[in-house]
Length: 146
Image (cartoon, rainbow, N blue to C red; front, side, top):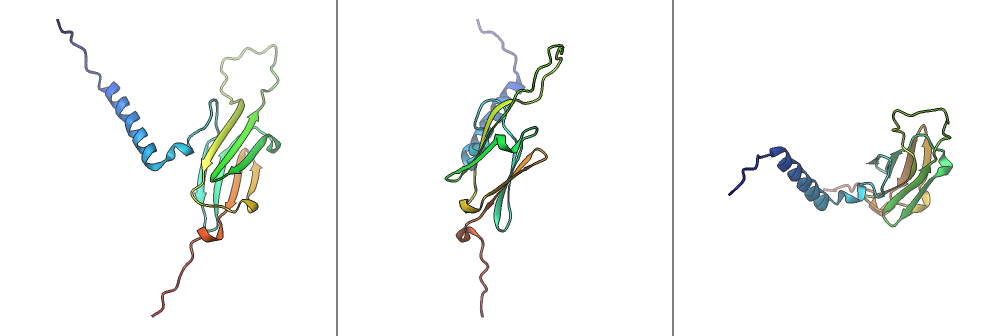
């Protein structure tokens, strides 16, 4: 005998969504912009100006000395560890949502940058890394003569 199984369109939509996400990641190569480690990872914004690539990472509650920024080829790597605060013996927690522990985030840069002129600044929980473009990657306007 055959059993009837109820149709659950929600399950099929979830599978379709996963497949579409995988397709976009494979096509656009966005996997390099995704978190690279277990645990918590800072959210990042990557933008571009005429002269530089700007990467901003949201890393609240840390000291600048606890954040490590490095460049390896075309990958900007941000690492750090948010230390566990001193526990109070008389406290019973009802909810713990604050992120703690080590993190690592790797971001593939969209173009070549001048590694000797990179600047990083941490202020009010935001790490801002300015990566000047190499001269050959900057857009140069060429006048057309008649």
